[in-house]
Amino acid sequence: MTYQIYALKYGERDTKESQFFFREASQKPLTLHFFIWVILGGPHPIVVDTGCTAADAQAKELRAFVSPADMLAKVGVKAAEVPVTLVSHLHWDHWGGYSLFPGSTFWMQREELEFWTGIAGQHENYRSFAIPESLAQLVRLNYSGRVKLVTGETEVMPGIRVHWVGGHTAGLQVVSVPTAKGTVVLTSDASHFYRNIERRDHHQPASDARGVREDRRAGGSEGARGGGPRSRSGHAL
Ligand SMILES: [Zn+2]
Image 1 (cartoon, protein in one colour):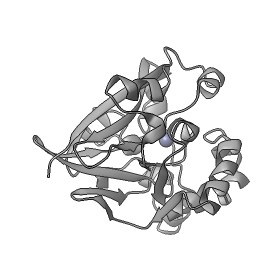
Image 2: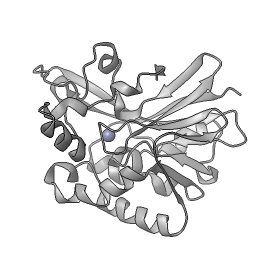
Image 3: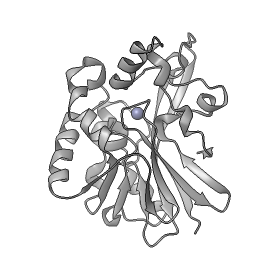
Image 4: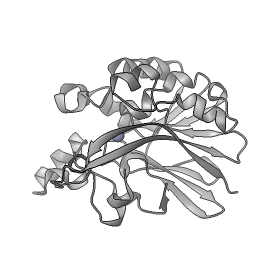
């Protein structure tokens, strides 16, 4: 079975090269494009990531925000009726839009849930990546049976798989999808830009506290697990 994928942009924001490439000193401007994805061709659509709400977008100074639900409507998908949403990780721009999907079960790595509802809140560094209200709601959703926790690699629909890669966050997962053009890997923030993959320049901050600790024990650098070289098993959108 092959599927079709749409990358749906819901906003943008300017940043600098130094923010997104490890040990890059350049302050050259760089525009970040914010996406969700939808996979069509199966018995029902599967959405990857939830984006964020208009309020989140305003608070985080996103430009040209369009609700992810409106973007889905452009390809004929009603967000309210999507039964499965895969959550790559729980940063605000990937999880903040959960309320747009009232009919969804949210699939995420167990490690990701544990990290953001636990140890991450202990560190000032991580707080800016999260919106605590949406993480609190995650606990309620879990208790109402709407969170599917997975570990490692799991098949979601025939041929569609999630894969743990970690690095950018403790439980970051990517999604592989068979298409007519070959296997597409939706890397999410395991690789923000093609440069991350092509030059093996991974993302600047190491967001995974456990990874940092392990690297220090091994005598490595703090950023050794930032980015996601293990996600390079196909084509990144
Ligand atoms: Zn992220």
